[in-house]
Image (cartoon, rainbow, N blue to C red):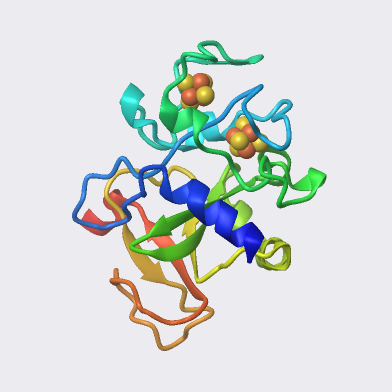
Length: 200
Ligand code: SF4
Ligand code: SF4
């Protein structure tokens, strides 16, 4: 519980991401980079500098940051709070070495959305979420570490802009097939729907 509490406190200090369909997002948080106060150095990974939105820079999700160089953040020290206050669960020491986002193709983060502890999984490599057994094992590791996984949100590669939830009908066969609002129930598992898919 102590562990969870410290994560909770850290997360709620940063802007909560909004996953609502009717908001023009700036979903998410931040980013890291070398030499941040992570428990683990990021090494050769720069996944979050591509995936996450950085409001201060006007950077949307899944768009490489202009300041991201091969050796890391080239404005480190002057990088926005959104970046300096965030880290993925691998950098936080929750996952194993082999699970570094650029290696395993998935980036995990924790946030509090509408008061609900959420684990979000972002594809670093397209279709990495299709390896369902591996995804389940990684979630299990997160649970064993002591973090809550009240909701799990999946972000397919390239998802950005306004999004909506789609309940995972593999896990919840009776869930509605279209975009849904949150279903308050333990261990909910959602997939984000890109805005273009909603309007198609
Ligand atoms: S995704 Fe995680 S490990 Fe990779 S650069 Fe960002 S914080 Fe570091
Ligand atoms: S400013 Fe630096 S840490 Fe932030 S997204 Fe860009 S490269 Fe990454």
